[in-house]
Each structure stands twice: as structure tokens, then as C-alpha cells.
Image: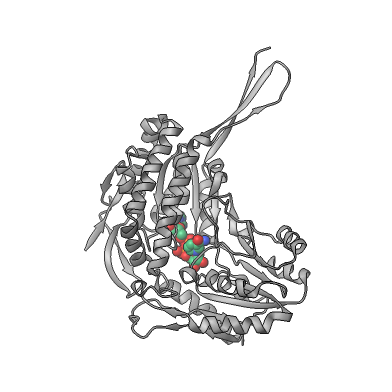
Length: 479
Ligand code: NAD
């Protein structure tokens, strides 16, 4: 059985405590590999290696050189596309076609940040006469990255790609539930010419390796993606050392459908935005708010689509794979049993295929209608393939419902009325707004992040590069 090690200082290292964690295939519940159970001592080693790289070759490299390394990495990821997709599909349970999309996105992250590395610059500022004032953007130093299990490759790429392009050295703690693809990419990074120590991966549990990273005094910035509860803990630990954090914490993203919308165009997107990755997507469109005039007809069409959805092992490549773990399955069941107990009608559900192993963590996608706005199903992140439908009567009510959760990550607005599109885009409290489309986070070019309990700071685009740098102001008096 494969036993994966940490990647520290350019080489592979077993956990200092000698312990491992079982890697479970969500499609059948079987253990198929082991990963190292990282300790605080392992995090110490990784941070020391990163500090040395930042003080040495990597820290001295020019922006153009960093861009070239990232471009080579992007090419290597593209060349290993099939292998990476296979690893990700087995580790997370996601259908192969989704894993292929993730591998392509990973290559694109490195490609984008390769090109961006030497386009990042400061400004000159007007000041008193006799002065020249300029700003420069410097890397933080050593950045810590805590990555979740839903999109291990993609979230690794978006965070580490930007951090490396900006000149930081990185220490990554991927999720214990899925991290094999990230370890494979670390080997590719070395092959691409990334100097030893510029990228370090320590696997392990969150409360051990993750917490050790978040509170480490040798870290200069922390980027975290995961649950709001853990995000709060990470921010508290980082605050002990006055370390800035970027938090990406999920959402309860609404899709608002007006009666004048192109329903044919909206329908497939409304379904895919919640079914993608079995709903385990921070930007999943998990609420659909429908203007009452089209509530029943649209629900009928949505229900017909939900009945067609098929769930099975990742290799079967159906609409949905299993959920990541038995724990996540229990969480989704808990929401659904609350809904049943509270009399919320199930409009339709998909089907788990007959030959899906019983030991896998399957959940049929479910469409629930007439969900009361105050119910937890309308307010809390399920992180499963569960879509909550709510009717509304006018624009004000649509906005109140859309903004009626503590989250604010992504919103979709479906209407042909141009003035309403812009009015709502401004009134909805959200980091991203999609009009007559829904991007589930969008491409690498588009800044992404939340407000409220969805977190703060921005990933992707140039905004991420700004986040991974510190602005220094230099004032020169020359008379
Ligand atoms: P989590 O937030 O606990 O885990 C995310 C990452 O944080 C993992 O790498 C984990 O090891 C690490 N971590 C956990 N505890 C830590 C700690 N004390 N200090 C430092 N790092 C720590 O998420 P989870 O328990 O895997 O999932 C729970 C819920 O979180 C899910 O049901 C879902 O609602 C949400 N979630 C959201 C996202 C997202 O992309 N926004 C991703 C995963 C999970």
C-alpha cells in the first residue's frame, strides 16, 4: 500500500512521530493508501526550510525567473493531466470528468501566475515638492496555506501559485481527507526547477499539523479555506503573532430567478451549480429564489431534472460521486432529517445507482421546496447536493432573502431587465455576482472571496498577488 511522506526542503520525509493516517476511497469506504501524520516538529522543519529558501536562492530570484519556473510547472501539470485527474478522482470520490476539469484549472492557475509574476509593480505618488515617493510590493516572506478536501488541487494551485509568483516561500497543510494530488504536484514543482524549500507540504490532522502551522511564529501570512468555525480558530491563532490571514469560508449562495428570465438558459446552470462536486463546493448555488409567477413551472422543470440525476462511484463518471466521508454524509443526513421533521416538502430527488458499493458515502441530490427563510436549510451551509427553493413576490423581498444569511460569497441573478440587473448586483451582499450565468467561483482571472461569515481577503486574479505582498512606501527628499 502506498505510504506518502511529507515534502520538506525539496525531499520526502516521514512523520517525525512515525505515525500515519489511512486514506479512504469515498466510493467504497476502503483504505487504499497512508499519509504521514504531521507533528508540530514536522511543521518546524518545513518552516525552517521555507525560511532558508526565502533567505536564499528563491528569495533572491527575479520576478521573471519565478514566472519561468511557474510556467514550466504549468506545462508539467498539463503533461500529467490524466494522472492527476485519476489521483484526485479516487481520493475525493468526484466523477472523473470533474477531476479532469480540476487538473486543467490547476495548470491554468500556474500559467496565469507565471505570466503575472513580472507584471506586479508599485506606483509613484504625488507629494510635497522636492520629494519623490514610490511604493513597492514585497513578498510577506513565508506563507502558510491550509487547504480543504473538496478541491485539493485547485485550491492549492490558486493559493500557492499566487504566493510563489509574488516571491514567498510556502508551507502547505492539505486536508487529511484528500491530499495525494497536492503531494504529486510538489514533485512536479521540484522537476520544474523550484528551489528546495520554496514549497513544503506537511500532511496531517488539522488540530495537530494545521494548528501548529497557524500559530507558528515563523509564518508571515496564512491563507485558509474551509469551515467558518475552523477559520475563526486559525485567525485567532495567527493573531497571537499579528499575522494577516485570508479566509475563504464557504457560503449559502443564492440564485435569484425573475419571471422575465430566460428559463431555458437558467435551468441547467441552476442544477449544475448545486450538483457539481456533490454540492461540496464553497460557491455552490445552494438556494434558488424564484419569483412567484414562475415558481411552480420552474420547480416542475427543476424536479424533472433532479429525478434524472445519477450518483455512483467516481470511475462511473455520473452526475455526482459520493460525499468525501462518513462524517460529511452524516452532516447532510442531519439537515435532511431536520427538513423532514419540520415538514419541508421534498420536490424531487435523484438516484444512487444499484451497483454503487454500499460501503461508499453516497447521497442522492435533493430538491426541497417552500423552505422557510428562517429554517437552517435556508441559512446554513449543507455542503452536499441539497437545493433549497424559496418563492418571492418582488425585488425587495428577493434582496432581503438573498441577504438573509450570515454569508456572502457568490450570487446569481437571472433577469432580462438591464436596470434590475445592475440594481440587484449592487444591493446583494456578496463577493461575486453573476448575471444570467453562474460561475461557481469563476475563472482564475476573477477575484474571488466573501463578506461576512464567508471570510475576507481575495483569491485569484491580481487581487491575490496584492494579498500575498506587503506594500512599502519609500519617500525620497532630493530638494
Ligand atoms: P475544516 O474547516 O475543519 O478543514 C479545512 C482544513 O482546515 C483542513 O486542512 C483541516 O485539516 C484544517 N483544520 C481543521 N482544524 C484545524 C485547526 N484547529 N487548526 C488549523 N487547521 C485546521 O473543514 P471540515 O471539518 O473538513 O469540514 C467541515 C465543514 O466545513 C464542511 O461540512 C463544510 O461545510 C465546510 N467546508 C468548507 C469548505 C470551503 O471550501 N469553503 C471546504 C471544506 C469544508
